[in-house]
Length: 132
Image (cartoon, rainbow, N blue to C red; front, side, top):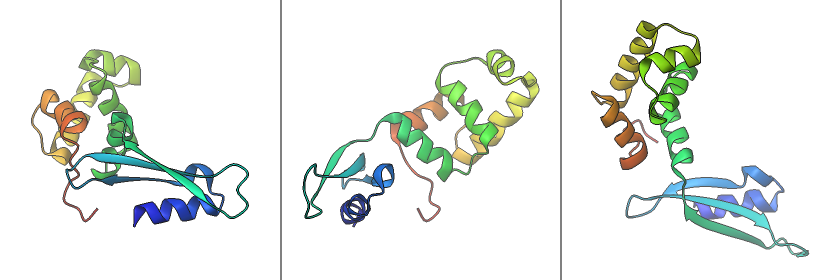
């Protein structure tokens, strides 16, 4: 289904929107990118299927877990290994506000620590069970 949708979007000239992410039967995330074949007047397209980069997966997971924009910024800093004091300085918020955001993120993702959070977002690549 996703392959057909990507090919259709490419034929319609949607460029960057001719993209989808899907899970394989083994649970691995894949990116599909479609584009028209150069010089082809019949509308033939190519679709490239490749493992999805961790950055794409983490963006998808942030949306799936309904993280607020600020929680997404905090999570990106956590993934980068930035300590709470550094996150507070980078985002111009107090350390206690960072902790509040982390508590909310932990609750939404269903983890108890930074290590579990990073492992879950970058390692396991599971979506929450919210009908996605």
